[in-house]
Image (cartoon, rainbow, N blue to C red):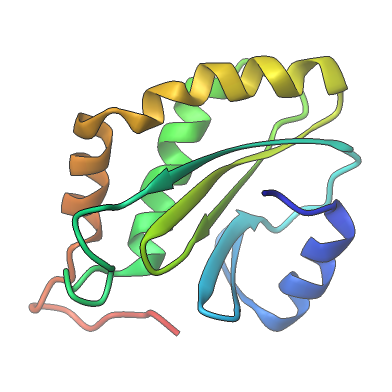
Length: 140
């Protein structure tokens, strides 16, 4: 579930910026969303379970995983006007979605994101999120 836009203001205040995006922790989850504000009201989300195991046992970086999911989300929905992509990475579940200006677009966006359930997408995310031992991590 993607919360209302007001929630992101408080998350941004406690999070950290990397370029044009914010990472913020809430409980045991990591949020990843644009640093700029939005007027979008309608939300949509697709939840994905990672049945393989939890992130820590796979030695995965939640920050890298969130970025990889957001990039796939953006590639799929880049033609949607006013898209504000949001990703939430929990211990073994990912919520990918966002906010859009037109409520009618929310349902269409959710339908187009069904490909995120594909094992090939998940495999790519997990590979890109693997911690690399040759350089320090920036996970907070």
